[in-house]
Amino acid sequence: MEEAQRAKVIDLARRLVPHLTAEDIRNPHDFPDLDDPDWHFEDGQLAGIEAVRFALRGLASDVLGDGEEREARARPEIGGQPREGGGAQGE
Image 1 (cartoon, rainbow, N blue to C red):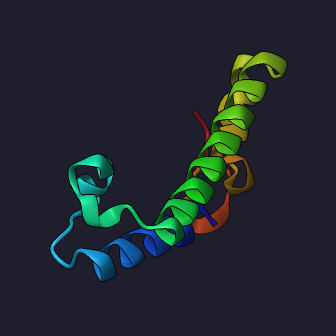
Image 2 (spheres, rainbow, N blue to C red; image 1 turned 30 degrees about the vertical axis):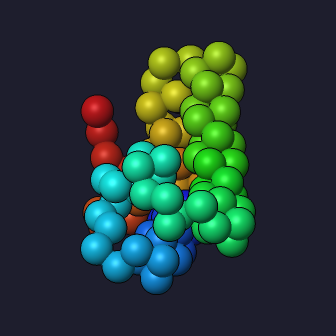
């Protein structure tokens, strides 16, 4: 979901200012043409998705033990990356 929203934000920004890079979008105040309500809405949605991911990681850190936290971070629904081959790997 986060990657799809990030792509949506970049695509919309590039419709407004074609030469923008992903790094440029981190500083939207440098580009007056990005002062667009639709772009700000989509960027806000991305910020919300990122905030939830960070909150879940923090919660996992507070609630789970050290080994369980690493395992939770590896789960895609908590913000980790799926492992190659789909199976659990030893640490």
